[in-house]
Image 1 (cartoon, rainbow, N blue to C red):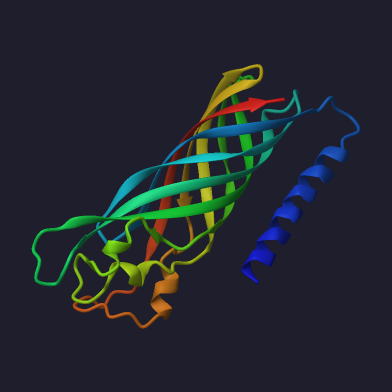
Image 2 (cartoon, one colour):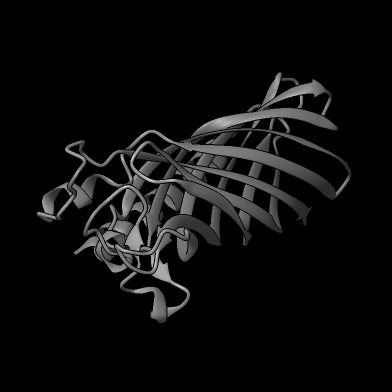
Amino acid sequence: MQKKQFILLVVFCIGFVTISIAQHTRYAIKNGIGAIGGLTQYDIKTDNFTTKSGDGFIGGMVATVDIPHKWYAVSYGFQYAQNSLEITGRPSLTTITQEPIEYELKTVQVAFMVHAKIISDNITFDFGPQLQYNTSLELKDDSQNNFIIDGYDALFAQDITDISQFNVNGVVGVSAGITNFRLRATYSYGFTNILGKLNDQNLTTTPSSEKFKGNQSMLSFGLMITF
């Protein structure tokens, strides 16, 4: 069901951009299609766990619409990212030594961005909403399944993998470049609680009584080539 909803979302966004471009009758709108690829730094901001951001990569497509006499341009982007992060744990309850538990998270993100022109089209300030579908957290090493999450008595590494899979983010960034080549740096912050689904699973969280709450953050640095 979730996959069907996501497919409908993508179709709607593509249709919206197509209609927006097709409705032009007055101005010399510049349309473009671009490919983007780059690196990410991903983390989940939470008081429940001790986390450390991890490296990843992104790749995707962007459709751009620029009206030369306006102070802004707009774009619709669709991108895939494979991210990683670490959560501190220990091999057993009696073990004092802490070790990083490594997780992976794959995301598909759809964004509608406004690009405010700081220096013509060469440097822009970018901002807009982003919808995201992501996988559950995936342990990189299955031998860490029964590691205990730091701060808990019986919360295992495998217990916290089933996180919320639909999320809404806000994105800000800067793009700079000439002609068909642009460098883009963006920061995405999750407005929704990506750990919220854990609260429905009757997990053993002693000695803590706090509900799970976390907001994702992702830095990305990429190169965009437009055609």
